[in-house]
Image (cartoon, rainbow, N blue to C red):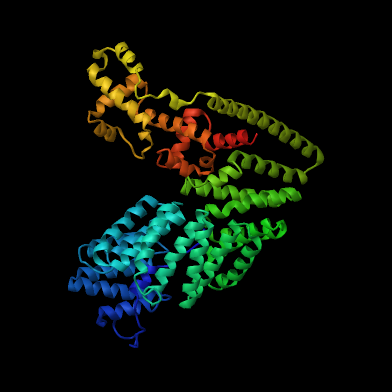
Length: 574
């Protein structure tokens, strides 16, 4: 993903100002609201003066008791604390929302909701951030159509760049794109936002590996930005097309595009896209077989990460490359260095994103990283000690590796046995039949008094459950016992009791088992489905996220879905 920071687009919307000619010696209490506003935004590098302006603005608003003016004063305070004290900024934004609700102002409280959402995203509170964006969307739809589409853009950016929900983001971007197509997209009012949307669409298509559509929108965006002399976007579209050519394995074209864009991106001090450029260059040089230059570019990615402590899951793939690169060179110090950084990133992603650290798990699982790190530390210490200490340590390492190897082999055998058991079991769907007569026998074996439900009603609900299983309605997301009882037109307690008695499971176990059993069968039969991400498979099988899908799959089968898919691929290749 190519980074695109919106850099306070709301700030741009609210700051149509001119520099004041009045003497700064003039008492701020005598300034009008517009004069205080203009003076505040004309001095972004003078926070003391901005603070004085905000105080004067609020004093005037309180004295005249004008709520929308109170809101705008609090907004100025919020911007002052935006970077240095986010929680204080959020508190001020809450005041903006309180004072501007139901005022029908063109920008408030919608912009305050958006700014608050951005601050919550920085704290990795994505659920709360999305709730604030949705509130902004509802308000802007009533008060400011143009700003409504800006809000949709912010939501699309969050879904794409933070949550990895590219299809959902794409739908929002397309909605904005169709709106802007009705406007003069080369005017100063709309050109920036139109090009921003085109970039979002191109970037989503790239993340979805739809290279033809990516190329189309990159070209469209480049032509639009060139026509309006928007240099920043010209080079972002060039960079994005370089990444697109990398996906196509057109390494020379990728290198040319990235090298063309990089100097301008460095000049504009766009840190996120500088990191992205070096990462793409690393991948490109690796594709060209130049491992030395590839590693130099991945080292630049690392240096930017160390300075800013920000990196996304897409750009961490350079670390396994550097670890192996230095391992092959016998450079233990650098090998240890990049293992340490890689594990640090893994820990951050685990804490902040939880389900978004699949790349780390695939490339190097955590136990492997710990083991290799400890071995390197011991090895480097041994080089500085006497030989007999070295020999003793090597023996310990060998024993540790041996024990770990035995443990790993046992685990491997255990997983293999579980995998073969899944492969050899009969197809589960064959057991399901609408005309299942077994239920009649089971009803006879459970007395009416035991569960307190009439036999006829039990039979009806069991038949409905058979149809429910046969039609695979359990794949619907967010299904609950309440929604199922509404569909069956019966009491949820009856369904719960019958599933507990006749299926010998809780409702949740029943639904999850059906989903996993279905998933196992379709993954066996459908090689294309095995190419899906775990997140996509989770959605396909009715789960809300990759984490819950993996947990339920492991609980049911004793192996992770990623292992099951990998072994299926091996089996098919054989």
